[in-house]
Image (cartoon, rainbow, N blue to C red; front, side, top):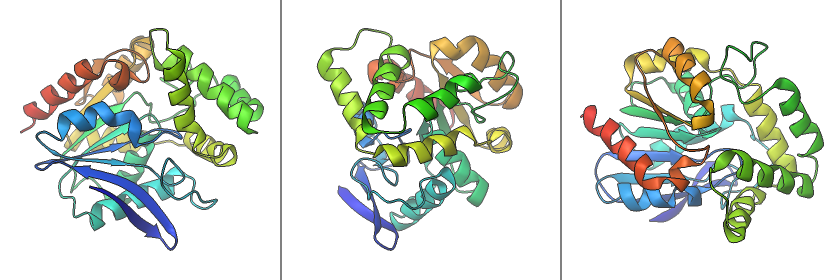
Length: 271
């Protein structure tokens, strides 16, 4: 079932809802859409109620100049789950989608969450202690991305293209694959992408990441290029969480079978 959920007057989120059983909810990252989770939908909808969401100003959801921040995205998620009568879900966030999950926890707690899967995102994006903390990247690099790229359509296209080839996947992308990835992002206008980028970079959800993992079964899946830094960081911040390492930033797309097996193994452990 494909549907639209109104989260504010005139603002609708596109949602795909398929399968039946224990619910699992996928939230894509910065400017990306439900389509990146196509292999997860095929797999998990066979045994679970599987929901994927285009966040506000992403994909087929309403483009709006209002609420393009992760505080609002967390509220939006709660409204979608409530309207769909989703009870005790596993929440799966990828990249900045993890911020939506942590913001949901900040606002509404963990009492109605069965488990968490957090894909390749530190709970605090920036740090002055880059040699010790897991971060999105050096402060100067992130500032340059915002200043030099997310100021026009070409800049956004160049930024996502470079990120896709350099960070998201480990193999050489076919031209049609790269075009598809970039087009996913460009569905969000560059001036909205800039708002989301800055909101994400200035977020700090270390408290939520730490406290939620103490009470809710939590799996982190991190990219191989982060593993040396990310694994000890997570083990210290969220010692009860499980950590798996796989591929690049888009590992659930490039290595979908391995990723799905990891998540299945995690979910079966907590039944």
